[in-house]
Image (cartoon, rainbow, N blue to C red; front, side, top):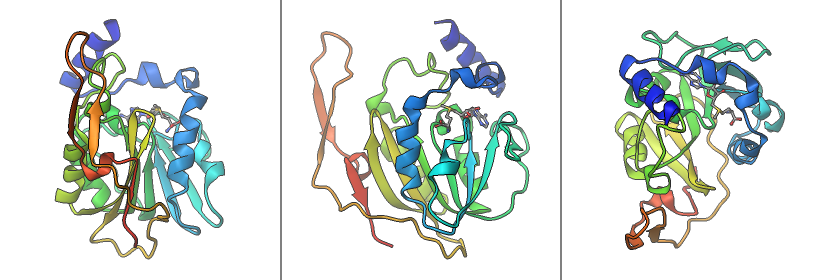
Length: 229
Ligand SMILES: C[S@@+](CC[C@H](N)C(=O)[O-])C[C@H]1O[C@@H](n2cnc3c(N)ncnc32)[C@H](O)[C@@H]1O
């Protein structure tokens, strides 16, 4: 409850949670399979920047020939670009073939601003997001400052210059891949999974007493969705 109230105030004030994230003791190795799945989308020989890099697990999971630049709220070593995604001004960055966000978008107060920013320098964006359909309750308690459904999250990218290339479920989160339409990066996400047949999605996290209900599934909520290219 205390964290939920603090999150609400930080959201109102536009502040990031430095106290929570400064120590790596709040980070979990349970997130590493998520990072591994995102890493599999990265083509060899790509220039990669990881935001919210944390324990830098992605660095050792990259395919051959990739360069790796970590960025985070605080210095994590390995020449971290220290950058607060909620800061009033975001710095101009070099161009990268792939920008990675594993467990980070939930802490960004102005997501549309971040997506526009990425359009300036990222050829592809791969990210995870705890969509509202799968995480209805306790969002502020987890420190999350935004609330997108899968459809809204994907349309945010597609309305701001990105093509939707990949969507796959990981635990109660979604993993996404987007391609910047205006990028001159020669690197395209490494997509291998076939398109799924799933079309219905059951919301199982209803309050006690209410009926389970099913809703039509946005393509990105399918177990695994991908488009070649
Ligand atoms: C849930 S952890 C994920 C860490 C790592 N990506 C992983 O999956 O193991 C969230 C990460 O986002 C970073 N973060 C949180 N708020 C941020 C902000 N406003 N700007 C930049 N990074 C932020 C934290 O420092 C932390 O490293």
